[in-house]
Length: 485
Image (cartoon, rainbow, N blue to C red; front, top):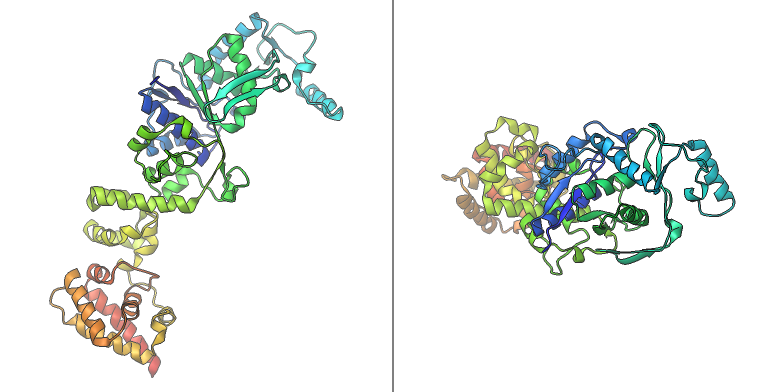
């Protein structure tokens, strides 16, 4: 297999979006599978949109996902620097080569005049192309004057690894800007130069760049550069499937998902499979499995709907997978930031016991805050919640207090407070009271937790301990007796 040399080249203009990350995952997998090179390059030439700290956020996100880069910031490499603003003079040299070859020109035309050309073409109902308005007297280039490519419009054909064989006519090729007034290159120019100098032989990017590809092909041709493999990635769509996913559609940044307790293994797994599959029914993939099974020809050529429910389901699967494979002790370190505030008064051993009986119900680690509070402090007392439960409300308050009295007597008599003895005692209570598990156990569970659900009752009571369990059962029993007076 040919070694893939590819790159992820984000712009530091804000938070890193779900779609941005997928554009890193596919080239990473292709590079790793072929024993190639994955480069991180920061395309920071759009200074008007530059956001302080965005580069660090990009790198932090890639590290969190396990997408380590072979060349780039913090790592270095033979093609440094990896920030485009630090390569400014390099782009100017290449633009000057095009001027010398008659394939580019200095263009001092001001923005108001350019807008007037656009307005005039619109009024005539003809497509606006700047090449139809090239200045007649082209000056010698000086700093502060933009440089434009001199297009050679003609039919173009190319192959895209996802979209197949494509073509475009001369009408979509124009005199694009290469160097801006501020001396920095445009994306359309800089990535051509950088990819060639960094030996990149596969370029993966969003499908929105397809319309610009004829201009890129013209630049490859003008420089005599071999075209790399082109991989256009379809959009991630909003849940309704009717448009490209945006923040307004409920998708959060990758950092927000991390802070909410989504695991990097799950996020990588989900995004890799969002628009790709290996032709099987498998859904849970480790990074190593993704590297082994990934192929460009299995990327779908249509948009994939974003489904947060599926992501959270997958995250729950990964929590269980990692705990079952590596044990509570090893995984516990990943939970430390997600416990309720009330847990700070308890030691790690107790919290591990809580986690051991709750982890298989978690969708995210942040669920710990909502699902475990009653293990660390008395829950909010709400007798109406108890009385409105669909199983408990079948009985009068007198019957409920009597059932709790029987339960208290039985549990008080236990010499050994552990899962096994509690399970036996609870089964004996079912036999003694003649009640169904859903009825008696719902009464006991709500009385000790006032939570919508809890782990198996014997596990819950074991972790809560005898003193706490008896105190809470007695509190509810006494409240029911008071209501009867």
